[in-house]
Image 1 (tube, rainbow, N blue to C red):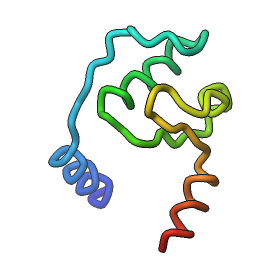
Image 2: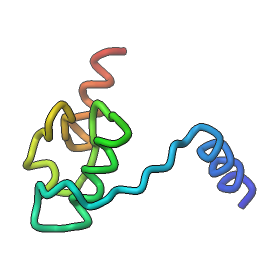
Image 3: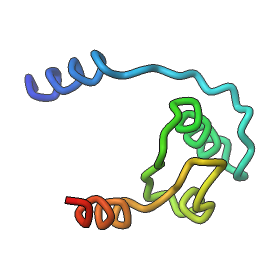
Length: 79
């Protein structure tokens, strides 16, 4: 509906699009590697995911990887 359209407009105004090249080879699943590469390209501090294979890495370079529940727990402690 209109709320979803407005939300997408807001995201489009502030988002930066990246096109991963496939250079990251952290896991056996190419799609997981693309997610990690995109986070690295965007210079993310944290990648929040429910994907167990990605979470098990814990980090790639300076990128921290954690579950949604762990991220929310840390976020709530800081408030």
